[in-house]
Image (cartoon, rainbow, N blue to C red; front, side):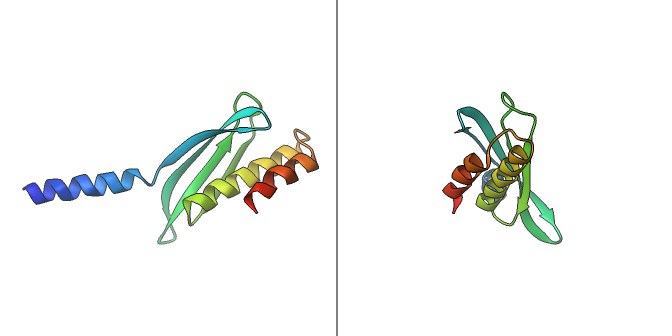
Length: 101
């Protein structure tokens, strides 16, 4: 009985670390990111989402095999959309993306 409780507790604790969220500033706007796990084509993947609700309705999204990759590529997706819509300049996009290279 005790070992099963401990096993379930450990499993739940480890699963909880798969989800991640946070906030940071992007061109003086507060933005958010969220990562959640998914199982796709028999592999663990992470879905990333990046958005700045007080600034624009644009949402960057990406699905990658790592949490960090999902964050990076959802931000890159957001920046690409923001640039295409004229919200930011090419220079601003390059400056921000260069932080990830």
